[in-house]
Every structure is written in structure tokens, then in C-alpha cells.
Length: 153
Image (cartoon, rainbow, N blue to C red; front, side, top):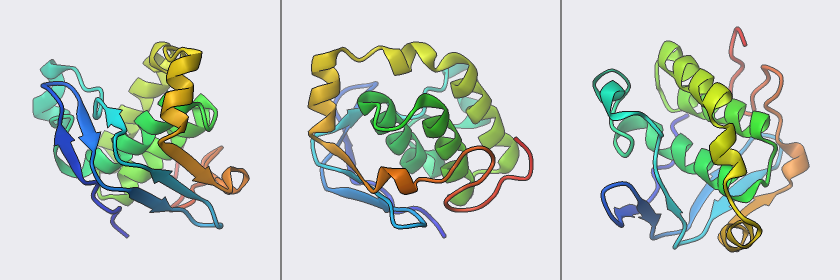
């Protein structure tokens, strides 16, 4: 099942804004809701790798990147859960498993700085735009996915 495409528009060269409510229903009764006005920087892919991985705001990576950025911006889920969910959403949306695993490994290894970046006021502002309904129902770790299991972690 493909993920719903978010309604986004550019703010500048590196940021996009959600302009219509985005809802991602998960298996097990949880859902992530992102309200209009939330900004994100897409898949954090160094420009050098755009030819291999893809542009941060095009293609199959955009919904997963939006969800991942929303989770990092709000700390609604622990980092490792956000990272595994990112990988699983990429695969769910049709990104080849090798590419999803590469992108997952990048955020798993190097995403700590971004996850820890928001200040208390930034967390509060982001949390006004991002909600998880039944967060205790999110099942993504280890190796289990709300959408599809990945054969190796």
C-alpha cells in the first residue's frame, strides 16, 4: 500500500511547508497527524548523493521523510523508533530495500544531532502541529513493522 502524498510547497531552497492536513494511519490503531504549517527539510541527503539516492523533495521518499522529520521535531517517539519507522515507510512506499536500508543506516548513525537539536520552545511549537493518536500502538522495533517486516535489521 502506497503512502498518501503530502500537500507541500517550497518555503525556500531547503525547506517545504505542509499546506493541507496529512494523516498517516498505521496498523494497530495508531495514526500520525500533521497539521498545515509544519515545515521540514525533506530527506537529508547530501547533494553529492542525489544522483544515487534522489532529491530530498521528489519521489517516493517524501512521505517517509515528512513523518521522520515530524517525529524528530517533536520527540513524540524515541529516535530509534522514528528511524525504524522511516525505513519501514520507505519500503512500504516502494523505495528499493537496499536504498531504504542505506537511508536508515545514515539516520541511525548520524541523526542524533538533528534529533537533539530542537529547543523546548521548538518542541512545543512542533507539537502543536504534530499529533500521534495511540502512540503506544506503534510497533516498529525491533524489526517488526506496522506495515511490513524487514527481513534483516
